[in-house]
Image (tube, rainbow, N blue to C red; front, top):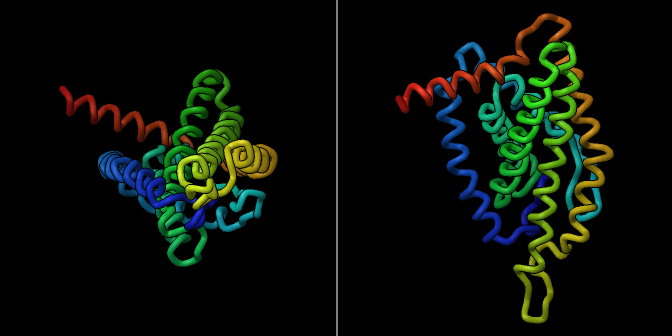
Length: 240
């Protein structure tokens, strides 16, 4: 899913970088206010986990790759804002030191995998988990579904970013300047591999970790909810 340089126009990359800037600022503020000091190493561990799992890339048609991310798992454990920071760190390190994803496309990759993925995945998880509250042992299932939806939402957004390039940026003769594939190609090329492969891996990993933590009695998977609830309490108090 990492977007390399040259597939998005500088304008598109600039817009997405600008969109991520207030998100990073807000995430930093949220994490600073709500993340307990003893959980900071867990955020570093989450960044390392996402970095490792994203290194297993499978090339797919359309000039990009499919892979698991782990962003929803970090969001469940520490909250979606902390997941934004953790996944961003992993993506920046990959782009600068390993050439996995473009430097100019850092904003786009972070928007897709450090914002869309963990937030969609977390709130799908939270919605399902709240409905099965009488049976909390099934939260692993909610986590798996949330992570599956989250990574596929990110893949769809990336497909749209690719697909709009030839329509917006081309020569006078109609030759695309950047990604040459229209939406009719990019959407199935991105979504099908994630629906069938990467999403399944993401769901299995996330559900497996949450199930293990539940069986072992670890409260880690509740930290995300506690962090969000704390953040809301802080915001409410600040507004009063």
